[in-house]
Image 1 (cartoon, helix red, strand yellow):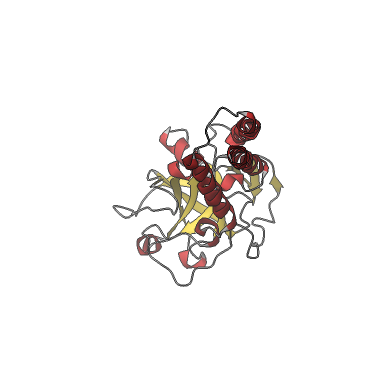
Image 2: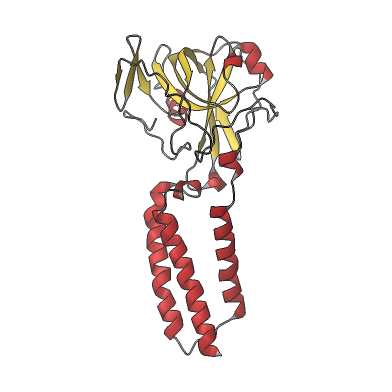
Length: 275
């Protein structure tokens, strides 16, 4: 009986290690952890898988039912996490105020729906750090990096940038002629995720359905006409922030394709930015 119990526990330990190895090498790792930690998960999974042999060969050790039960629960939860639909990828985000909009459309993070037509297909030139539209060179930057540049006073009025993200709207922003371009920034995992947003001045916010993915190229201008307080909420984030010194005056704002990995995992302080 003890030999059978050791074999069962060894198989559970090996399965735990194998799951971690599979997750680290899979294209869905970013849905759970920052990709920069994939090497750590891979190493830990390999070590745990090797420990299964020690569990099997150690005859002096008494197998505890609670240990085996813990491994079973972990494997069940892990399997559920990677197989069930996740609302972060299958449901559009709420607006800044958390209000529901019945007319929302869902592009689908997991490719379930058709991708949008590529934005700015008439660009004169595109590099890793710049895109040229109508003779103007816009610096590619993500929302978190633009907020950081604003806070560090590296961004100035008149600077030309292009950002991308999901649209969020509120009645207050609609009245002021703004949309919010939002991203979810993850340092390690969803437990420390933060929402970031940048306001873009557009002629008609109604052109951009909440939840749609946009690419916004424009120049920085001093923020004016903003609500006294914006109830900022980005799904998946415990906290959220938006810039209030500048807004992006939309030179060109277009619906565009969602990147394969829509979340942000990196903030750079110089070009090329992690657009």
